[in-house]
Image (cartoon, rainbow, N blue to C red; front, side, top):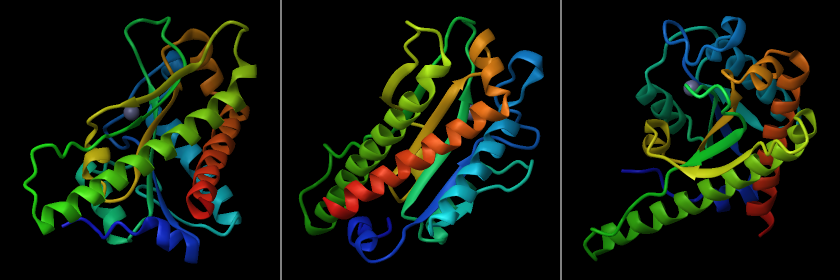
Length: 224
Ligand SMILES: [Zn+2]
């Protein structure tokens, strides 16, 4: 049974607990880009920056992994449920066979509920899934907007980095019991963006923008 969908009520009373999920780890390198840049290392570093910044603002932040180790996807969402997280943010970097692909995209999962029977229990589940979907979309939009605003000046004029908020049935999004998103912070395989992603300055900007997106979302929910 999913955790009771009371995020908005919780947030009005306390600082939320947020689980940050650095993608991949251990033998699972994730994407590998130019100069053998490994996704698992970049997203762990960014996730640690996000954690530090949100903690300094008084939020309760936990990482699904703190070091270079493999953690199955189901364990990541189980962990978030166990600690009663209010939000789940998975951080990844992209790769494509087409080396021209670049930009930022954020995913959420719209739960389907068309086939349910109309009784008390499924009405509760439906309302929970509706709320999770709506909040996930709002979180995705805030993070996506913040990243594109922060990072667009680092790219060539005319290179639109906003690949938009998208829907996808990723396991961490389906399995999570709180509003959840998966953000792809750029393409390691793009010659220019891949190089940017390897720099400390760009990683700091990404972390700053993700933090702003999360805080904007929380403020929207709390004061709506
Ligand atoms: Zn990934």
